[in-house]
Image 1 (cartoon, rainbow, N blue to C red):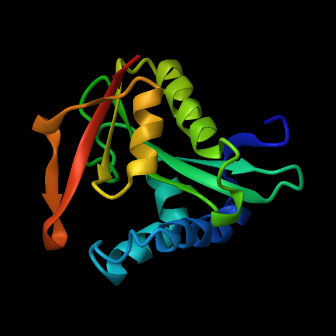
Image 2: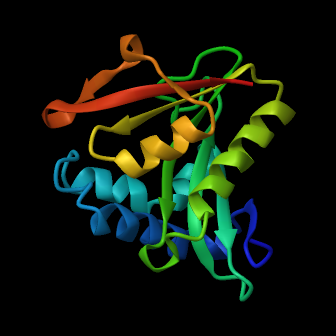
Length: 166
């Protein structure tokens, strides 16, 4: 995938990254059962994510965003699951037109690499039950399910927990 580069998102890209994230979640119906418009707004607000976490973006050969992921450290207002010695994956999204090219895997691997750089011992994440494609990716990369960390959020949405020791 030499035509795709993963790097930190630039402020000029925040709007496009936010819209890409919403489009990806909408395309798969993931916003239908989420916490309504408020979650879509969280996804859309990439600039806020970048203030409190590392916002990574995958760009194509024309430097157009085709995917994104948020890397969260403990203590951040974005942290939902991570504790000391961990980093968290949040809001992984690939543009609907960019799927099937390994972009989600590239973004996930970038978080793993960055977690190692930061000295984290583990990567954690939660994922909606319906995100089965993402679950297959995580399991292929060595993540394991940790049911005791599962949690329920607004409107009875169950989030499944996954972890990977670095």
